[in-house]
Length: 399
Image (cartoon, rainbow, N blue to C red; front, side, top):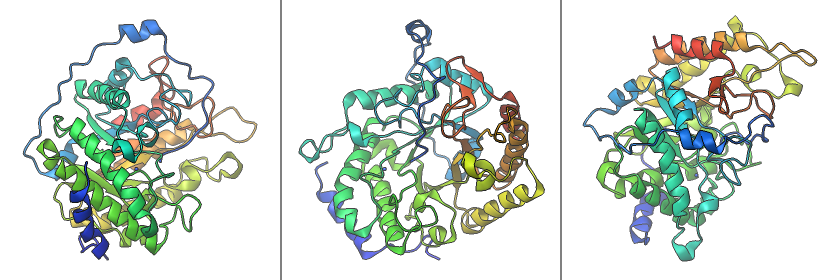
């Protein structure tokens, strides 16, 4: 097993490459018809952020993770190709983030797509100032609520390709991106966490969602190390900022876990995605197999967390499940959904995660009434919850 091992010769050469330089997928749902934009009046009424960036405390990474309880993803928003509202969700307001915090979530993940907001090599791959400022505005909304923020690069598989033949093409833009993010957010304290990649993989490649290939896993180790080295080189608060690296496609497949190399850095954590069990939480309508929370479902949850413990938490390596969740579903032709079963499922899932000290962040794409994947829990138009029973179950784990 290669955890805390030595990385390849190519990765060692990476630091030389980086020092000579001048300066990454969540769920791609279709827009939901019920999520129109907020009114101008509502936006004007939203509280103004205070831009309190907090402090970078001298605490152990495990203490930091221990403060992270339960989280929520602002999905299909900043990561929406075409703009913040392009996939049907309204523009994010301070009031929305206030409501998330008031419900009891103290972690928010901001999936963000950067590649289409960057210039080419002639500009040093410069990120649009307008986009950087907008992302920062939403980070500030969360900081005003004393939340932890996980900021990543999302839906970048068109150019971030974990293959050894692609690393020379990927690294200049990838390191330029994280240099700019790190420099812009340097003043922020330890409640801001960077996540280098989201579900890194070769689209349509071999074993895309089951660990990829040996070549892909080797290339991912290079990218993970480049991310860590780049942020650290930015200095200031970034020298101690908590960082999340991930496995191939963020999966818990054995090959993905076996071949992951964790950089030698005491502020690095592992990001994983676990929609467990898949047949219950995520399958398409045509192939849904399980509608109710059963003992078999619970056993599969236990099995996944036992594996995560074996590879990471038992070795004192912190883990965050940056995406989990279960779609709201019904039998064909039926109106009644399995929301009550999801409430049972999430209570068991988070209870097991809590035993391992693993914070989990619900994937919310804003879609409950329509859309390809009904992970939505928060009604962003009305600042209410689609299924309060599920939210109550989540919060009951942390009482």
